[in-house]
Length: 317
Image (cartoon, rainbow, N blue to C red; front, side, top):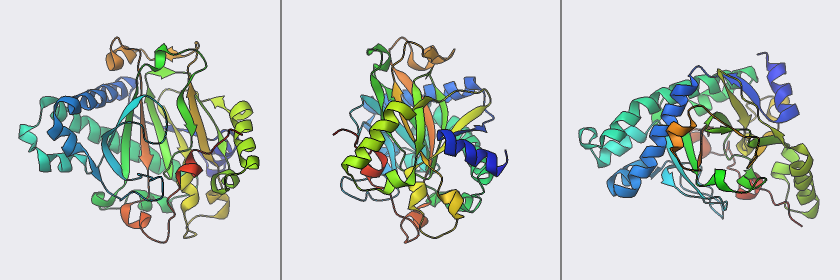
């Protein structure tokens, strides 16, 4: 896709499809393993300790944990969810607590699937950044040293999300913290909706005018993210506007982030593999890749980590 076409789609709807060469069956298999690993941490505290680490200390108040890995629950939202963040360092970090030969079979099975997901996600994000004319950021997100990469796969289990009333906001509206994200898989299609989230709202101070603008965006601007076989949905985060070094042309750095939310809808459609992931529960599971700047770049004057209010703007009066 030409740069102008990709940028135009992000300007118009907040996101764009990019090729993702992994079958839905393999994506679901990863989601199932990651969800099972979350459950494993409940009964095996050593596994939980091995998966949990920080690449970057939290900043701001309330804290923004842009480098937090492991299994956790909601932090800045009221959703009933559990999530796993796993990245390039996760396998080695876990082995520091439990040597791999002593790890539970489930965890040892997870690592090859996780590494395959990282490779494909990296390939798709690199392609997306290049399609926007933002090739300079490929080395910011994917430096040669994997030890400082702040890129991870986020698997989220929304507990009981299928059992709530139609119209319920099961994924609270927000923009992501990082530079960009890649929506890879969901057990149920048709509940995520999105809109362009312009820089003036991201960086603007909380005010009645800003709240009114966000409320209007939520009422009139959200449109469903559709699904295309062989692709994933790519969009920008609030961190795109935290770049301070002028490495991107103004027209590229000025692109909107993606404000997105998930609503229970009678029109949602379950993936044919949903049952394998959530069993007989009423949960939903999604898999997303988060692209933050590498640790050294993030801690430099070249980048401003977004605040919570930049990512989750208030809209009530």
